[in-house]
Image (cartoon, rainbow, N blue to C red; front, side):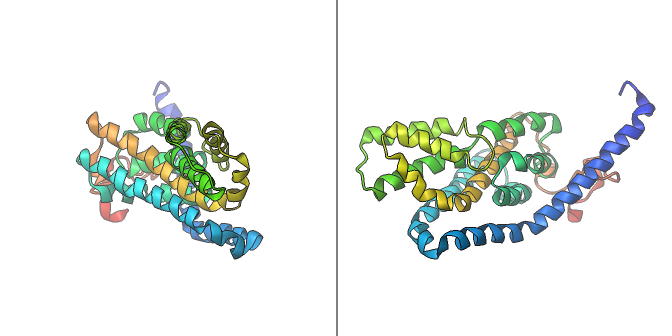
Length: 271
């Protein structure tokens, strides 16, 4: 701003760099299904179907709990704030897909931020603060849902009867764990260890489920990223700074596109 026209070349360079990054991101999203297939094939090839089948119920429980959290809890919050559920999931899909493939909230952060601003209508200034913060402290899938279900599964596997006190400890540790889990693959094992130790359950149970951790980590991360996009949208709505035209898909703003200087210059049909 202070340099005026003298900084025009720098601004153009930044815009062109952003356009390149966005194009690469689109390629990554398009190749995501192939990557997911490779990850699952690697696990099956390494451990075999026989070793994985007994853990099928545990995998199903994690996916069911995460889907319930996304489709019921998050959708309910959107409806309570008067927002269209379909508009949110349409805008969040690219980030969810990338999170599912990478199993990393931090790795998905650039796409999460981009979608939150350009597809969900959250102002850039607020999203740049809220989304990275959520990637650090809001881990519903890895820090809350996963340790709780895994602890109960391990107790049933050994088998052990859980007391009411142990259930309370599991619940409390899982909630606190959602605030302290790092947004990179594999760190949820740390929170599971803490949960088992707090509830007095055998730590050797971790070795039984670590073989399929990659499969369930994909769904856990998608849940995390969805929540990290949801909160800024809800807060922006409450503060009356949400661009609902962008949110509902009536207009779209692509900052990396030199032909799109404002939301009104790109029609929704061109998305």
